[in-house]
Length: 154
Image (cartoon, rainbow, N blue to C red):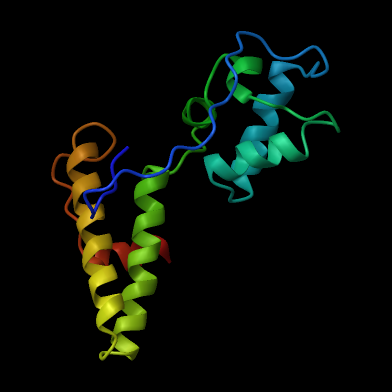
């Protein structure tokens, strides 16, 4: 995928091996995995953090290499079914948190031109993502503002 604010392409990462079923060594029950996903979400973990915790810690001591192979559903689908998901998509929420941190830094250090530019780029990405999600995962009348962002993240 091309970079957001340059004309270069990024270096590609490694791809996960193609698999249609979980490995033999991972004999985890799908219901146990779903319960653990909801439990971790209630503890305040994001979907990507939940996936990492299940991969590292597992359910009852057995690691879960891929939630979708075990349950047939993605982590976000499990969270939506159990009403444990976030109001905002995870990528948008992370960018908004970054924009808040940058805004606070720029307010304290007005001479920092580099971070002013980083704030402009980050807010541009937020607006672009809001346009992408508007109507699907966000309300039609949703608009990005710094004040809304601070209220949401507190």
